[in-house]
Image (cartoon, rainbow, N blue to C red; front, side):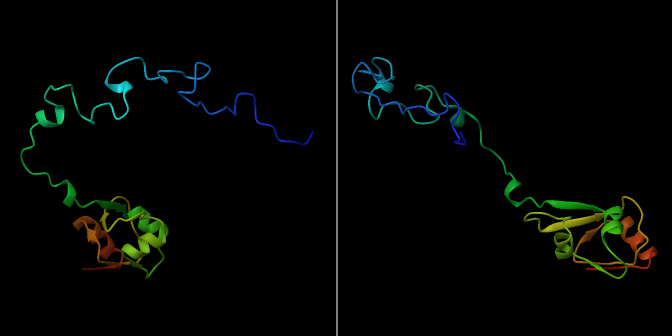
Amino acid sequence: MGQIVAPIGANKKKTIVGRGHGSKGRACGRGHDGQNSRSGGGVRPGFEGGQMPLYRKVARRGFSNYPFKKEFLAVSLDTISEKYEDGEVVDLQSLKDLGIAKGALTEAKILADGEITKKVTVKGLKISASAAEKIKAAGGAVEE
């Protein structure tokens, strides 16, 4: 006792192919004849047997702005009111330090969801007009 034993069926012997009829014998699990039974056989990805492949059929027209898309993290005034103290500066680095912004986000925008009573200074973030009004009304400041 006291020995850790693997459950039955957990450890299986590796299948060795092409070593007689006791193993996977002559055809080695590849079927009998044909392109896929040969070494080096098979077709490249996307090949459809000579039919025009889908990736060539689908038109590629126009411009996609996807690679240049900017992702903004939406931050509500409730979140700022909850996480920050009076007189603190709200910028991207402080958002990351407090765990509000995660990952490689480079842009954030403050939205006017909720209320704020603390005097905070917002630096270097985008901010909606109504959120800026609420922050200024609470005695805070908004800097570019």
